[in-house]
Length: 199
Image 1 (cartoon, rainbow, N blue to C red):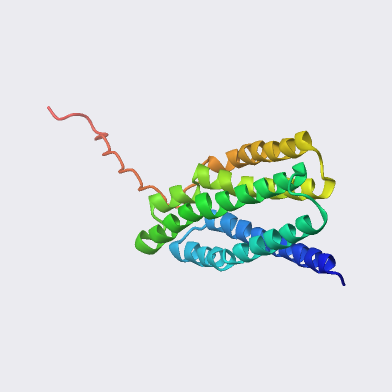
Image 2: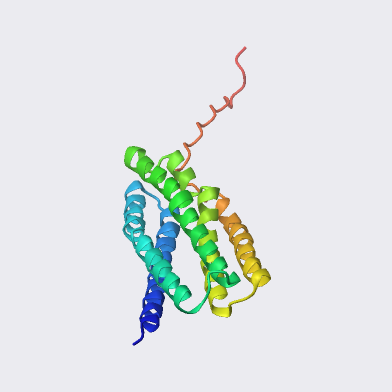
């Protein structure tokens, strides 16, 4: 096996790791959003927390092997290489930056107050869900760009389309789901006396 072949193999393994981690994280996020108790929410939050450390490993594998292959056979000036790097950087910024900060806020709220109204709002945070969906669509766009190897217009268009599709796809998740907390029953009105009024 050549050095380039070994790098390509590790690159694909890193991509597979990223896909598995992303799938588990999204599944955990969906289940967490529908949690009906603090214990259930903490359980799914624990799953997401165990998956998150896999992402830096995958990113490191993708970047290091991609850089080696680019240096060995391609060029850093190619549009699809630059688009791939830009897409990977955007995924890291959205994932560790936007999602990460809101995830830490949610974890603190669950530990302090359980499934409080604020925790429920954080579970349906529009910014967080937009970032989640954008990372998924950007990952698909990067994969497309690295496979097809388009020119500048095609590479830029793929990333721009991914951002728009991700933002639009997140809109349904902005809405609050049905609350699991039942409102208090209204007090019954006092019955009017049915007999004739006294003289």
